[in-house]
Length: 116
Image (cartoon, rainbow, N blue to C red):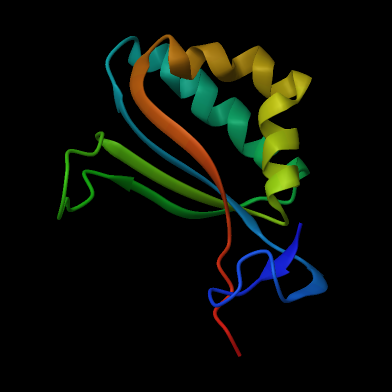
């Protein structure tokens, strides 16, 4: 997806790819050892898809709502790259270590480019 501005979402675009973000908030509620398998296996897969972990916070300060125990923000070269990571065979093989042992949510988002 090309970049769009806040003034004209989907309107004025350029050819640079728009970074994508994977944002998750979750609480580990199961087997900590199995969850650790997910964490260790996931990092090399993230790297393969060009990801950069920007935030990995335990007990983030909530200003509104009730977030999970862990908050994670990961930047990818594009939302397509984020989805390719999530859908990859490598990630799908280890995903259950997180989903079986935690509760929360995960979303994929495009970066917002402010108007120039």
